[in-house]
Image (cartoon, rainbow, N blue to C red; front, side, top):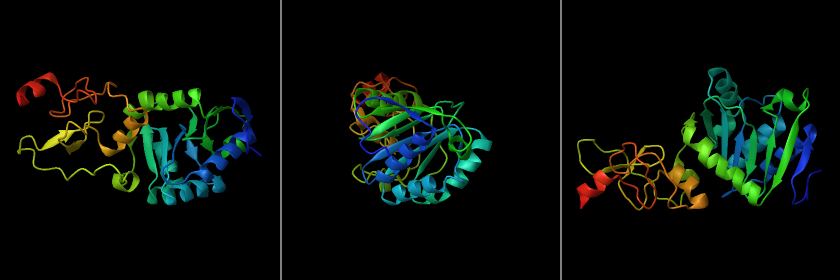
Length: 245
């Protein structure tokens, strides 16, 4: 129904939103990514979409799902996506999430009123804006990078090397008493190898590399882990920079 939908934004009605989601999820393959941002997620009855998400993860697509950070929302999401999680799906929680956005790399995005819940496509009247690949589609991804990613809390832990094999894996954390052996991701402060040329963890390097802005401000010093307006160009704070000279 939606094949060749066009290259301009259009309004989607309830059933068209469901069809568009299924079409794009089914086409995800390795090296493609998707963001499913929905405060509420219950897909026990949406079996076709649930299976499509699991199959996309089996094909090693990077599927990121973000739900509202509340126990009553996390429980059904983990249950409904359990098979996909076992195949590498990334499930995140975000405090007080209300936005609904479905974004697919090199394809399109849908800004919509519809949560990914059983009732949205069966008993509700929903509205969606289809956004084809292009400037606005890129701006939606930038919004995810700037607004959503910094506030994410990982609900499940999957081996990052499985998702991003081209980026060197970090070594296990060494004893904190050994000086200058550990660094910190300048976005999430997780422990990584101390290497000013690679100041991000694997997951957030992937996010940063989408735009590759060397002056994009992050949160902590790569060397000491303290709050600092770090960038790829200047990943360490002045005190650490001065101490190493």
